[in-house]
Amino acid sequence: MARQSKYSTELRERALHLRAQNSPSRMPPTEDSANLARAAYHEAGHVIIRHHHGLRTPSVMIRPDGTGVTFAGGGIVNDLDIRLDVCLAGYAAESVSYKDTLFPLVKRFITALRRLVDKDPDSAWDDYVACVEMAVAEHPHWDDEEILQEMLDSHARVTGVLKHRWNDAQRLATALLAAPDLHLTEHEILAAIS
Image 1 (cartoon, rainbow, N blue to C red):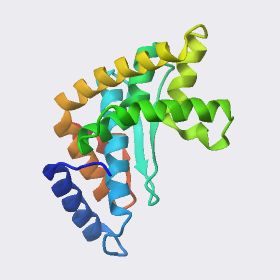
Image 2 (image 1 turned 90 degrees about the vertical axis):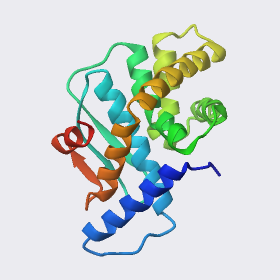
Image 3 (image 1 turned 120 degrees about the vertical axis):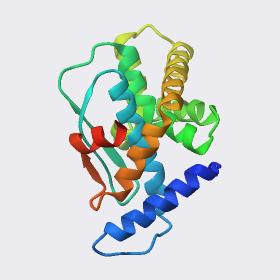
Image 4 (image 1 turned 135 degrees about the vertical axis):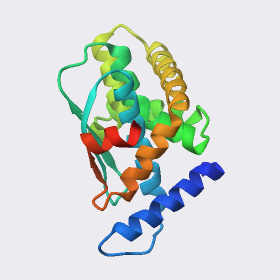
């Protein structure tokens, strides 16, 4: 299990307390609280990197099962580096928040390759599978090592941005956890990171 920093643990507890106060059901935190906090950081990572690259984010949400989605807004992004940065930002935010090493990146990359080879129908929502598919589509001649290196380079870029803007990511994750419906609009996102 990944270690959490003291601040991440305190933030999660504070966010869960705020959510419990704002929730009509006022249910106590459950075992899923850690999954919700991790999902909030994950989605915050996508939003922060989208913002960093000048991309709009109309809304973001997490679901009670610990999954989430960041909605993209406006236009197609043709730059592979930007697309990979946005795609990997969720897991990079988790690694910053929970002090994970790069090992999960490599392990998830291998899993993504296997899911692609096996044509796993559940892989459509996996960020790593999406990254591999993007890299292969743009550079079909690349081998696995070249794709992994591109992902490692992206992870390093994104991690640097997230560390620099970590206060924004924490405020956004807190706001997302505190939202009664676990959903933020573009206006609420901008208010949290400004």
